[in-house]
Image 1 (cartoon, chains in turn red, cyan):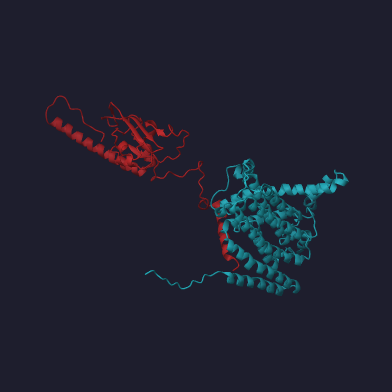
Image 2: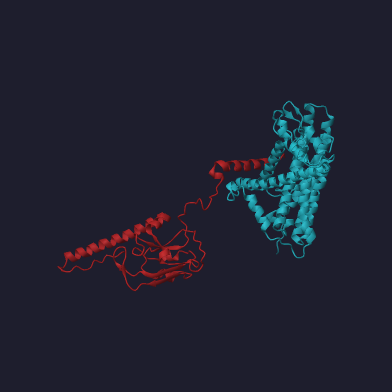
Length: 203
Length: 391
């Protein structure tokens, strides 16, 4: 009757005002770009190409199978397969993409390229500070721009990277075991003088 | 020594006037007073805009502006530069002269009102016998300026906003003036200087401010609510609410004229707060008798600062009132309470001093307040609904 409701409201606002100087709860602003929130794992922005090891050209997982280019709905991936083969991270000669371009002004972040890649070579990045003043060439990313290490992948998507690494290690172990069996069979079987080239594949 | 500091501006003014030939002294004296008002109150306006934005930000769990200068304190400068460099657009079919004059009239009327506010002991621009009357007369010019703005813009929505603004301002003038009548009755004078002098006395350490009486307290509350509505401030800012009618009556104004409207509104807010301080809060008088050594102008501005903080606090708390709620509140609650308040002030005057008159007056204020607010609560009586469906 005397306006106690108003006074209660004003007490709440006063609590907010004074509390904003003492507690983080009552002042939730993150002053970008001086402060940043931690990157969220389950988020995605644009794709990147994963490479193992230190050398981005040598360790790149992509073998230019062209599946992601075919599956991409807005057709923003442009790949040119190489004519020669080069050894990948586990030594087997593979094709590699001579040209791998993604037009991020077209890319709709649907993640289909990631889902269909059989070689775990393309994954989604979370970087969002991508402004450029050149909206044609600046937004057509080439192979070098897209290449990021597996260690970076592990930092932005820890759980996913752990699963992928485990899967890849398992595949390699299986192939190692298979190749050991074949070499043992060969040495235990015929007394062939020249050993066959070891068919150890990456996957 | 405290008297010297208290009267320092008066002494300074007399010293400067000593260098002026005797014929020109009245003009120069007036000029000095006017210039000091023109310097102090717009500066206060600039500080208030910044403080308001920071305080509202903190109330809303965010920082206010903090990029322009340390803690954002150069933000008013940035705002001034922005409003001065914006293009001044006048609609083609607008009434040019009236469109130009409306913000000028608003600012002039608001500034005129400062002539009768005693800012310190012996510090008043114009010591009129009928100071309070002058204040309210000049305050009514503001409504004219609002209507000039709305009409000259030749815009339906601007006119609609202006009509609503004037309706609101006129409705709240009545409780504003009635609430100040009790003070005039008690002081027996319309002169602001006399009213403050009456309140500058002490019994023991307690001051004789009118707000410490039942009728004075009720009058103060009514005056402050009416003052909020007069300067179109939240929660009474329907005529200019950005989500309602964009900018209401000053929608067609850009750049500096818009800044002048803003300035006029805030100056009006300071002027009515200043009048509330003069009438109810003892003007430049210190709150306790042992604090009289602090200069009088300090107390005036301290009280003004407290009232401004109150305005900002209320703005950050309450949602906007709808037009019909606003008008109902003015005519059906505030006006009867103001009239009752006058009656209570009379009762206070004629009863002998003592606890009995306190009891009677407090009951006479509280009971109608409760009854009236309860009676005015619109409880929707829903009828039993019958439905006829198509066969």
